[in-house]
Figure 1 (cartoon, rainbow, N blue to C red):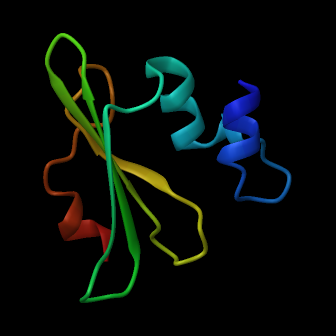
Figure 2: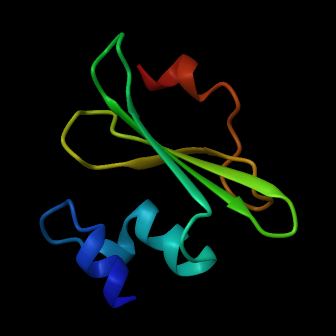
Length: 91
């Protein structure tokens, strides 16, 4: 939890473990792969985490406001937010 608190803190008054990234990290551990990109169309960041544990699962985090606060917008992991059309509502 300390790693999440130290690494994913981006909002005043909110611990890193309380963020979407922090929660996922605590629950599933470090991702097998991580792809950080910036959308050329809108200049906002997308951070995609891939896990390869008993299958291949992705978590997509989006910095909707460009402030460094990432929201989980889609995942293929059962029980997590599933929204394959997240790009239609993200912008």
